[in-house]
Image (cartoon, rainbow over all chains, first blue to last red; front, side, top):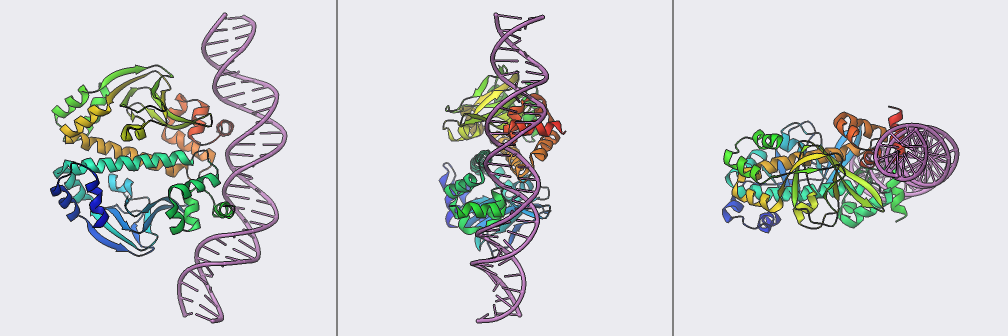
Length: 187
Length: 187
DNA sequence: TAGTTATTTTGATTTTAGTCAATGCTTAAG
DNA sequence: CTTAAGCATTGACTAAAATCAAAATAACTA
């Protein structure tokens, strides 16, 4: 558990006991390219940590596949809405390349929170980080041209451009495939 | 402390002791229309709870005022980025009408988290709720026309339409003032 | 490898929303 | 009450990006 280990260690004041309890509840699992971690309509029971690889969250509206986010190695991912509310997910999550993950059950995580407040504390800190990143994303997309949104992505998360298809990136950046293709051709 | 009280009470397993400790750290404060809760460039030291009234978060880019979010009564608001990272805020928060708020200092909140894990637990649940709302907002803005984005707002947060100006709503919905005006005229 | 399918690029056209400019409406101040 | 000042609406025009359609690449499969 190379980098999952490091996650908790990064945060101070977490006892060794808590770290081992946390790690022991994670199950390693490998996904092939195209395999689904989460499905629309089902309640999300797992929080995933991507050790290696990449995933994409998306939903279908009017038969169109719209990318919500990309998750890379070292990141957590789940259908947050469903994981938190325990209602059916509106999104799919798929691996866009072969990925080594670890996952923890919702109920195990809740139990850990009760038993080790330090784990809930760390989780809160991580959640804050993700919240801020989401806010930033919302801001960046505002009042920027198609080209600027693409340049922004190159700047901030260049790996996505290598790993995802034009169509996946286009819907993520809220533009048509054709527009993205033209933007790319003019560097 | 009418509705702030109710916040913690809504969540189970919070001791009376924790509730009083929590409430005692909040300071009541009234803002006039146009007064600033947070300023760009300064580190955000407070988390605000809006008892009555409404606030708007915005930033300035290229001399343009761009609305990030609106906060209504019963909601918490702060410059999350700054509050969490302790770095200078990139955003302003202003009241768009006379508002009765309560606020708690960053350091007091952190101390409460250490002393009462139940408070951090409740905070985590609230944060998750806000995270989901943000995700939802990001989804709604994608691949919707100017008209649909406006209808969405009427549907979900009609109060904002009464309380905010056309310019404030337009930048929030990522469209020009003129476009919003035209959308409104065609119902 | 050839053939098939999917993905990406390019071109022509249409649609949507932005900008600029003028006018109308409200509100606040003298 | 009248006059500004700011805010909101409307119109004409422009720019950006979407859609439709076709061609070119790339990727998969028999």
